[in-house]
Image 1 (cartoon, protein in one colour):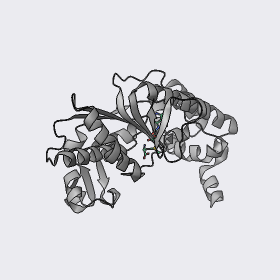
Image 2 (tube, rainbow, N blue to C red; image 1 turned 90 degrees about the vertical axis):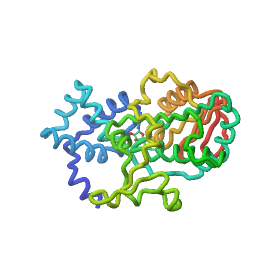
Image 3 (cartoon, rainbow, N blue to C red; image 1 turned 135 degrees about the vertical axis):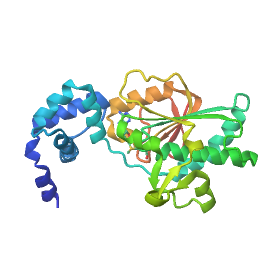
Length: 289
Ligand SMILES: C[S@@+](CC[C@H](N)C(=O)[O-])C[C@H]1O[C@@H](n2cnc3c(N)ncnc32)[C@H](O)[C@@H]1O
């Protein structure tokens, strides 16, 4: 099996030296660390782009991405791993709904604003799961049918990949991607079912999408172009692609952009290590001191 993959990808087309140059460029640009074991993966993901451009040699593609900012963005679209699902790690959404929201509803009762950031939002399932959770928490707390119950809620959803952001903004998914635990009534409240040529698809209802702002943001940047501080930041299954230096950079940025006592959600295999100013609050959820 592996032999077939290696054969199809023709690893000789990408010498170790060239792989090292691509890895260095990708690390410098996006903070994504590719070790030697990722060579086949990189090769197969970039090969499609070479084909699309009519280029035969990786060397020529390297020269192109080095000198072309737009092409670097496209290269990152090709290499990023975007796996995600609605309500991934459901216990996080239960914690948001049952613990954080009741706290925010009291703490923010005066100005009624809540700000949440989904960093590395991929195709949108994570930020839409967040807004569905907020909607449930708000309507249930007031037994109210107006989704935001007078609250000013905004969710910023960012990713380095422009390709996933385009899909996220559309909010269209296959019916079988919709969370299995959702009752039929809830399903209709949050999703529109497609007909005709859109049969088998669902679209997230507009009132949910309207409070999300999708934007490209590269976590490697020295300064994040954000004027807001957030009550909650989700950055799950993103830092697994970073080395310790990049993780520290991102964590210090999140610390800066969180309110005191704000929450940071990480993925199931990501923990906060070393010196930092976060306290554990729940399973891979941390709180700014
Ligand atoms: C595996 S997905 C995680 C999606 C979602 N957070 C979840 O847990 O289901 C990782 C996402 O991180 C994004 N990403 C990787 N490096 C990034 C960077 N330097 N800045 C911003 N986003 C990045 C990828 O494009 C990808 O969409």
